[in-house]
Length: 434
Image (cartoon, rainbow, N blue to C red; front, side):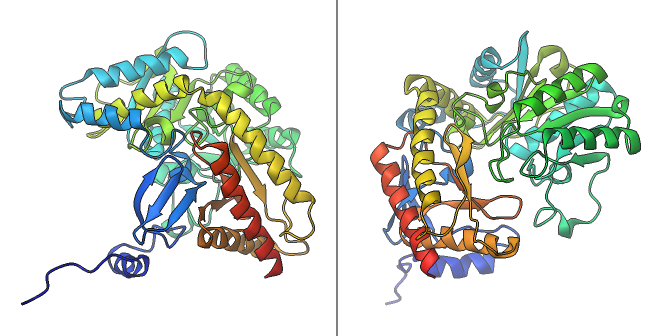
């Protein structure tokens, strides 16, 4: 009799199937295939346990399958899964908008519209700014990441791997250096002045978009002095300031929004990732008059603001408040930075920089003394791979790919965080020996 029982899944077998069925353009950071996950732990299809320091790339600030999020989604499932908000609206969308409007980090009334991905959020923020100003120019920063759709790719400040294969990208997108290392705030502002003099006048610029903390760019913090100058410049010339909070939002930095550390008020805020605890949801929060500059039909999407995702996001906001995750992010960040600072001083480990970051959005650079950038990036990737072999999922990032970033769920216990750091320390030791 023919045996119809499918073979047990293994990571190796699934990798072969993935290579045959899925294009190589979507990269995979680990050779691990998930079977289940809980809070800050994940088990693969072979039953092996991993500590999760990636959080689905900053999506799981409240952890995998938080009970309140699961309950909210299950409850919504009992009513309906989809109507399209443009066809038949529903209360969870409106309630979530109301709650975000109340917490928006700017004065005056706010309005919020929802989408599905971070790239949709950044693109629609630009659409809103263009409609409000009647202008088309957009200024972004080198090293910034704003998504992989075509306009978002144009705004992203990194050629490899995001731009190189795709030919001509949407025009009227301009980049200036982001302050870091040898580049000062004054240098960035000077280059912005050169841009206004040589390529586009400020009266033709609709928006300046910036991450309060660059995500893919290496967890580089936007200096408050830069943000203050940008706010003044935008006020002077009628330009809209967009804060891209896709990776830095929802308690990760020790504030609900990363821009709050600077004390300045943006005009538009892009949100996604940890907004809905693993459900696909993004949005743009903005000043009400600005948000209403687009006529009916100009914004939206079939799945934009899906009811299951809105229900999940309402639960996420409750969890952030009830479990005091903003305070937890600050405490976790101090714990992470203290441990990494100790590694920086040691000579038996792979050489690394001092830690940097806001709250629990923490990173360090692999230094590999006397080595070029390509070699440093290789060591960062190898370090992450070695950590994965030992049971820790952690990711590299950075303009040169030489940064290791930590995005532990804020709901992880101190004991679990310490266990993950022990694994990372051992990987640093083994990498030094290798």
